Image (cartoon, rainbow, N blue to C red):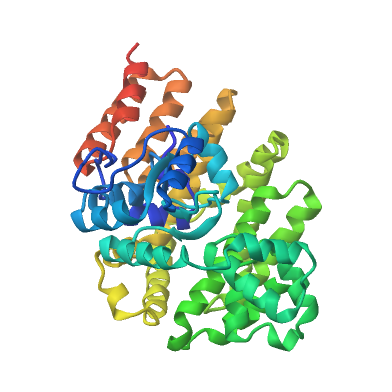
Length: 460
């Protein structure tokens, strides 16, 4: 069973922030709120042309907590319904099923929920990532209503660039437009960097345009943005821009990691990540932390490229090193990390720091090092469960999983331990741990279907 705790720490933190959402039916049948068009993508484009309206597209996944919250709160709301039904043809797409896969690829969807506003010919008008409540949802819709009136849509800008308009003023506007839409253009960015002096790369408006179009850490813009971020750190007036830069550089690195095909590309990626850590960290990054980061990236690369010999060799070493870390040292790291978080959060607006989601996130940050250690051990163990069959490998994974339970005894970690026991033929013990996982999941209000399915399989 795949679980949020098998994801990376940042993904884990985001999911934890929304873990209180436990049940929701997608709202589309409620006559008070948004009326969603049903049919194919081709049919909704035709309907939009018929009604002479742009299209609002809710792109979601079944596992996305914020998607469910938006569907529960915003879609049935009368004010939301009045605005959307009057101005848009509304449509919903599961990004992981049917036509949704192609549509998500077409519009470069990388996060959920994504709200797309497109014209009847499919041209992108505006996009919004995430959900910030009904007011924020209405604000974005009103912006889209105005953006739909723009006499120069992105398709016109695209044609000008393709036709050879490489004037600095045009390129700056084009990159800004692309950044706003969340549709980076790497070619336009590199062209812009050749026509603008390097000293101007880090002006505020250029930082925004470059951040929104960065697609790789191997771009000349990457180091420039890191320098800009370092200079902005500690300036409360630059907090929002700093967040944008850090998100852009981090996303570029993640994209490079997913696309790396050779050891040389992997080495360059790790070097770029280490440079970012050294440049942006509030305190000096230890060699141990840099090594741990590099090992995580290498392990992910070997797993993705199915180099199981190198994966086994590296993860065995990593697992043994993790087992050697004492709980007392983790508690000390928890305290230090939490203090850094408190210091960094001082740059955030009071409205953010007082929000329920932030407070929930802050509570989890108190044991972030312990949670991340449990997550690392669990991830190693789960990968072995998925890919290994040799009992010696599975028993090694069982030891890692067992240590993760010593650090944090939650349903997902208990499930991993039970699954490993089951694969080793120790069904009676597997049942015991899966029953505990199921009970804890029920108490937490989680979806228990996968736990029940696993338990049933052990009892056969």
